[in-house]
Image (cartoon, rainbow, N blue to C red; front, side, top):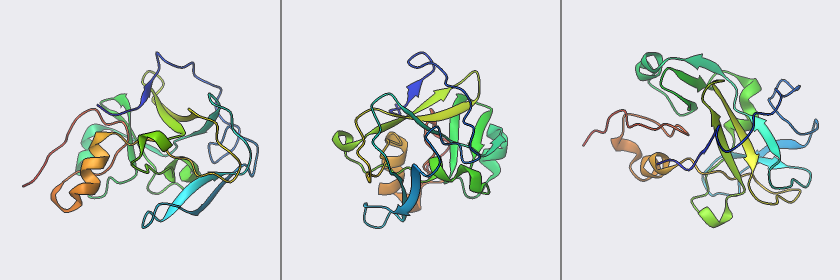
Length: 171
């Protein structure tokens, strides 16, 4: 089961006022080279963030399960908890903050968590630990992603955060 929050565990904050989905002041989040070797880019904070602070919203185009299953590249599709409500950040530069959160594979080093607000069809990122200025944000993608990374060539689905089902596995 993915290690994501639920709408029972958190109250929904107001919609971010920034186009990039950030709940923090402008310039507090930056995209830079991840500290995870081979991961590409990551999301970093430029200010101290307390546990429980909402960081950003995962933004993108809403898609049904059927639309998602027809996609060749699902790498940046995230489930919201509703079977027919997924967020595809592939073609949306405004989604850049949530898009670049990495899973470092070490549960002890995670400092944030994705929360799915099923009824609103939203996914938000919240700090679960103190995050010092200059730190990279790490959140678990769940077991599906770990399996995906380990067997990337044998799966027909991508590392979608919060998916509560397996689409298909090919031997």
